[in-house]
Length: 404
Image (cartoon, rainbow, N blue to C red; front, side):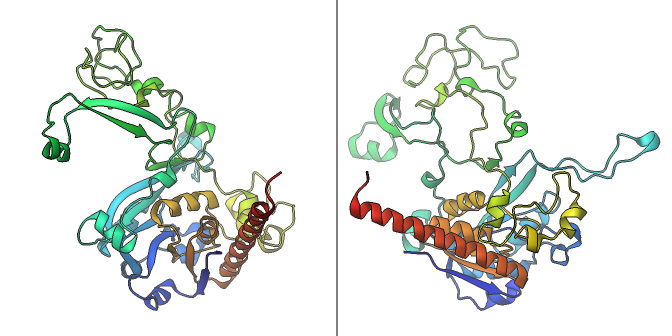
């Protein structure tokens, strides 16, 4: 079934006030950063506490809010979200290598001095609506309160599902049931495929990946020497190597002096930058479903002013200046929205969250104060709906007649 979407045009505070209590499962949004971006009036401040109060009201108990922010105003965004009654749970960092320094460079005797660092990070506040009782009980009652870890695992060749065994002290319920309290009680389990999602996302650029050095064995099995080393308290210098000990078996204490968790984690190889990655928005992504020519509106070395004055509406479709990648919004939606749930974006812009919601099978409600941007969002979202319907029809036909 095609997920529904609703686009509301107007001030989001007034629109939110018309929505019923506890009616949405998640909020994923890219609100104004309060930086007066390109002189835009809508970016004069981060959203007021009252907007987040209404977001809190319409969310189901335990529902998550993910809100992008700028590094200079992240503190104001998070404080206002918290003041509205949300519980701040974490912050996700979207790291990228394509940021361009917007610095005023000095001349003369002060040449080489400037006013800004190269932007390479956008923080995303992770907040949750408080609830009574346990997480498990709240998920059972409302479908909200937990993160969909398995739907957001990071898959790679060295993160495959596998069985492990370990010896450890029996958990409390086993002790109560069997009396097996001994330290060497043996258990078996299955490692799931894919790594646990982290609170960092990157764009896969060389600049970012190079910031994460190769970490063979994640340092736990990096040495095969049994001797204690100088500088053992420095990160990267293990107290002792494991010699010829089995890397993934916790049952031997060894000379390391502590026991690592079981499983294949210490056999990993490659860069530590093995997190979810998503590049900045491509021209194809931002313009799908819109009328535009193949001629770029600006050159690759265009200034911010060039971008602002370019003929975007006729030559490059999407005129919104801060379009987020659909893949990134889809990942964030999967993380905090139950299957088939309702996702809200009170600052919809050109509709990347809505486009991603259609792709992921979520219901979507978007608010946008600018009719021009709302029209762009409507076209992008409906284009994605059409594509999903075509793919479903093709899949149904293959099921009917069989594959070749």
